[in-house]
Image (cartoon, rainbow, N blue to C red):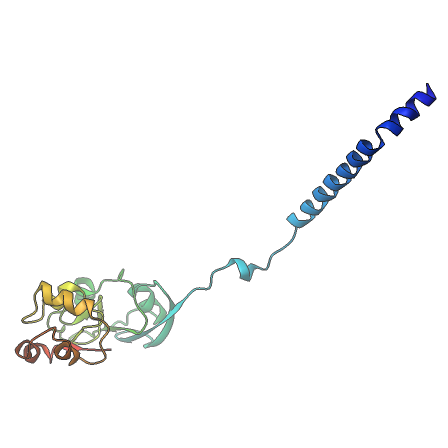
Length: 196
């Protein structure tokens, strides 16, 4: 019986050896893969870096200044960064014209008028407000919406669309150079538009 067993081992030694090597490799692979599961990756590689924007907050604010905010922040965030409204803020303007939920873009200016300040002509209707942020009584042709451009004298939907499609502009006079508006229309709007 002993000799018979040894003959069988001799006959199948190659398959037995290969099976043994396979078992060793499988167990080794399992050990290596389980060790890799406990590996700590640096958290910086998993976290996306947030983009920032600079926003100028002034007027009836407790701490006026330029603040670094996260991209996608809103007017409310800029006001909170400035310490909130001062006691002398024009509450009527805030409730009627200021959209606290409006998203900000890099280089925006948020100005909160004081009590007794007159609200800019056209505020909330495109004349004194660009993207919900009071900047001045001029419309920035690089960022104005279709409705804001159409509010300008002599500018209809077609011309407003042309202005938007040819952005950006370095100077307002490019509207003439690119033949987007006629000289007579440009004369009507030149004091109402700006580029920055």
